[in-house]
Length: 136
Length: 417
Image 1 (cartoon, rainbow over the protein chains, first blue to last red):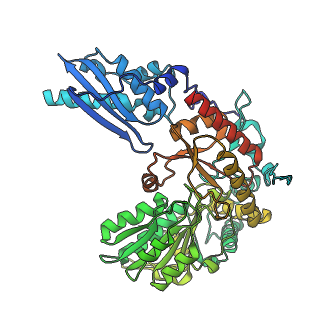
Image 2 (spheres, chains in turn green, cyan; image 1 turned 135 degrees about the vertical axis):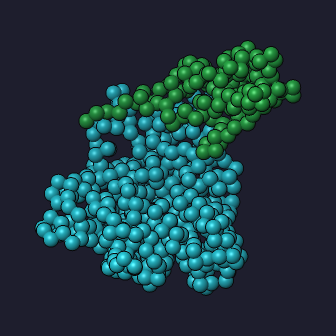
Image 3 (cartoon, chains in turn orange, blue; image 1 turned 60 degrees about the horizontal axis):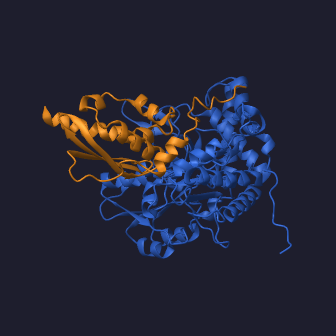
C-alpha cells in the first residue's frame, strides 16, 4: 500500500523560525493616519482579519502597514509583505502571485492554509485595484 | 489517594480497523497516527468494507423488480440493512428512509415542513446547531415568513432550559435540536424539550449525527417525530445515512424527490406515490452504502452501544483531566464531573489560533480538527474564531490522549517560546 506523501499535501515545515519570528514581532503593525487607501479583508471561515494601509506617491508605495488578528501564517505573511512590497509600483504589486508569498515564507503552503498565507497580498491587491479603477 | 485511576490501555476492537493496523497512515519517518477526529468521520472496520466489497463482487445489481437471483439478493440485503437500522433505533423498517446523511435528512424535513409555516409561526432551535439544522430553517424562514428562535447556552456550556421554556409556546410549530453538540460535546435535555414541544403541539426533530452508534438511542422512548443521522460517524461508509420519521408524520408528507422507485402509477396527468419508505427514495439508491451501514449497525451492536458510550465517556473525562493542567488552556464544553457529555473535547490555548494549534498537532500525527465546526453562530456567541476539537471513537485509548497532551505542549513551545 502506498504511504501518503506528506510534503505534497502541505505537511512541510510551516512553523519555521522566520515565520514564528514575524508572528511574534510583526513588522509595520500600526494603523496609518495619512494612508492613501486602506482595505480590510476577513477569512470568514477562520476569523483571520487583516487591514492594510498604503501610502502611494507617484504610483509608488512609499509606506505600507497593517493591523489585524488571526493565525500565525496570516499574520507573518502580511508582516513580511509589508517589508517587501514597499517601494514597488501599483502595477508591480498587481502582478504578484502566490509564488511571491511562498518565497517570503520560505515554504510552499498547502491547500489547507493557502487562504491564510495569501490574505495580506489579496487585501493589498484589492486596495490597489480600487485605486487604479478610480483613476480610469 | 492510593486508588488506581481507571486506565484505558487499549481501544475497543481497534484491531478491526485497517487504518489503525497497517502502515498506510504513517509516512517514511514512522510518524504515528492518533486519530482523534471521529466526530468529523469515524474510521471504517473490516466488516463494513467486506460487506460493501461483497455487494460489488457478488451481486452488484439494482434493487427492486429484477427477476433474477442477483437482483433479488441485492433487494434482500438492502432491505435487511434497513431492518438493522430500524432495530438499532427501535423503529419499524417503513419508518427508515435512506438518505445521503444527516444533512440531507434534515433538509428533507425542512423542505417538506417549511411550506406549511408562515408569518406568526416560529421554529425553535439551539444556538449550538450544526449549519445543516440552522441554515435550512433560517433560509426557509426568509422564504415563508416564519421566525427562527435560538435557545442560548449557560456559562457551563449546557442548554439554557429556562430560556427554552420562555421561547417555546403556542406559536412554535417545530422544535429542532441536536442530541449532542459536535462543537462542544454538550448533551441537550431532549426529554424536557420534547415535553415543551408536545405541550404546544409542535413537531420535535432531532439531529442525532453525534449520538447514533455512540450511545443507545430509542426513538419510541425519545418520542421524536423525526430523527436524522449519518452512517460515516458511526463506523459506516460515507454518502449514506437515514431519516427516521414517525409513520403518521411520513404519511402526511408529500414526496421529497420525484423519480423512479418512489411511484406506484404514473399517467400523463398525474402520479400515485409508492408506500413508505419507498415514497421518499427516488432513483437508484446508494445500495453498497446501505449494506455497509447495515454492517456498521452489526459492528456497534456486537461491541455493545452502551460499552461504546462508557468507553468514550471515560476517554473524554481523562482528556479533560489532562488538558486542564495545561497552562492557558480553556475547555469549551461541559467539564463538571456531574454533567453528561459526548466524546468531544473542544479547547483553545490563550494566544494561539486554533488553526495553528491543529496544524502543529497534525504534524505530530495527532489528528484533530480546528475551526468553527459548522457552528459559526455559536462561535460568534462565544467570541471565538474557532476551537481545536479532539473527538473520540471506540478504538481510541489512553495513549492517544497522552500523545494529544504532549503535542499541545509542543505547539505551545513552538508558538510562544
